[in-house]
Length: 198
View 1 (tube, rainbow, N blue to C red):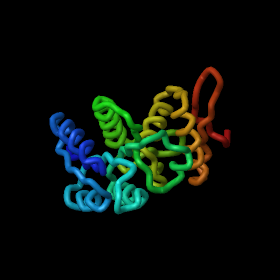
View 2 (view 1 turned 30 degrees about the vertical axis):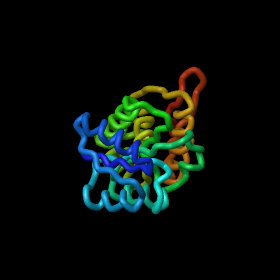
View 3 (view 1 turned 135 degrees about the vertical axis):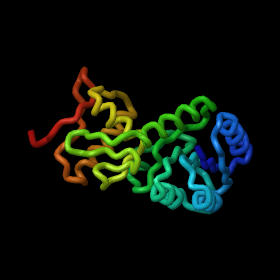
């Protein structure tokens, strides 16, 4: 598997690049956004890990190009993202906040790849397509949203701050798609999918 690892901090780039390479990944590195776009065109990576502060290319453009190429993205952040960040059409599939351990990065890579390469499934009337990271082929979803939807489809009832964010964002997407399903929280049960027409 080829991973594009892009960070302005060359020590971080070198250290994690070496570590991921030792774990069997082919690692392609970039130290700015322009070089990351060039590596994307040349190498066609299976996944990208990007630091939030890459110079020379706006983050939204870089994420947009990676999204268009169907390359899953893990964004490295200095602080947990605000909800507004997820209103953008160019989204990372997951994020990881500094400081993080090599094991945390490897775990996140594994989870993102597992979610974005899984088989299609349904949640109510909506088809979730992990390979294209879309809802019914129309709206983009992140790997974390796919994981949340999969847990709902499997009859689990996710809870917690990440579940709250996923439910909020997905309900907005269902509304834009004019789908009758919504994700609702039920006390002592967690989140569930409901059909608003029933």
